[in-house]
Image 1 (tube, helix red, strand yellow):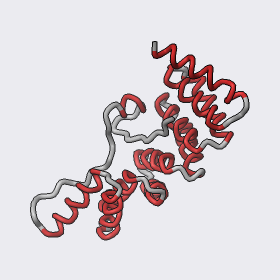
Image 2 (cartoon, rainbow, N blue to C red; image 1 turned 90 degrees about the vertical axis):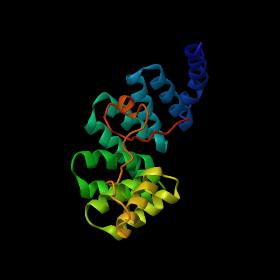
Image 3 (tube, rainbow, N blue to C red; image 1 turned 180 degrees about the vertical axis):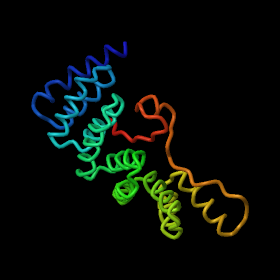
Length: 197
């Protein structure tokens, strides 16, 4: 039943895709990915990106990363980041951090943070705390907490408790996992943010 509905939806959007509409191309890419047509989804995300859909490059990166193409994923995240996509900058930062490129990761977290990404602010604070930049870390954790990020709130509380010497403090937490993320993204302990319909 669900597969039949997806087919109907895909067929309904096919004319929009043929007219080079941005949303039509993105919807087709998403439907193809849900259907398991990875090659078709990759082509459709590429097309949606060329047509100017900001989130398509980020989703392409997640798709490529799921497939194990880390270099391709990094290129896609860079395109999304260049288009001012907070999720693309965040995913790029995670990739760079995993590769030990901390200065580049920090810069990407900053870009995502400036665009309002709560988890990016929290992860940025963790990097700063690890470098002994306490005031910067506190400011980043406060931004994350104000955006509703639970790790940012916990990290801020831990940082302030350590200052007050109230109780033993756990190390800062990064937003690194979510239900199904590791399996869906092909990268353990990854918090990847996707765009949806």
